[in-house]
Length: 246
Picture 1 (cartoon, rainbow, N blue to C red):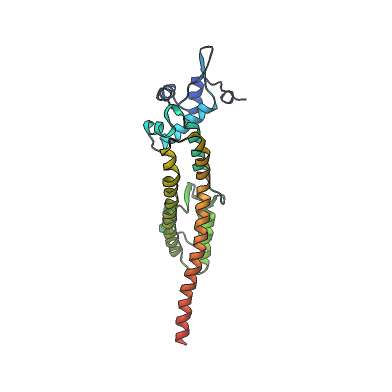
Picture 2: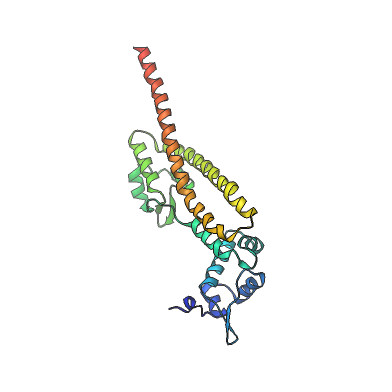
């Protein structure tokens, strides 16, 4: 078993494990962001909980949080840090779906029938494609690319398909913000106002884990209903106009 798993890292080893300086580790301890080590024979030993907490701090700093904000978020003396780590895992867990694909420029052109640099730049801006070097592109959501392929196969232009995806993407972000705001106002705010009671952390974590699937299920159900209504109305008018011309 590794020393870090047995809780037998010295402060120097902890610094090596996390890529952080001993000075910064001491600074985090003085701020109450890192729990004290277990002292044996006048030597302090650190374990996996210290490694996890330091990595959490590093992640939050990379996202732009300063130490004062981090201290406020994970609690005085790090009391809420372990729970916050679970929250972070729930937030950053990958959504269920297809595995990303990697395509060459030639494969991409073969599938969508165009290598127009402007349209390629548009697809990258929309997040449909992510350049990974060597003329290759990652497709984070292959389903979106397949939908574009089918649209093109039915006689529509790639430019029109990308414009439609851009509009849908804006609406998707708007819907996502609605659900996130709902969670923050109705779940997180009361929890925060109550002082973040320890016994409610599992409930909060579960709510975050369910947020994406719940939003997806609700959106899909409403979209199916709205799509049916829109198709019936639009093609009803088309058929009505045709009947009048006969």
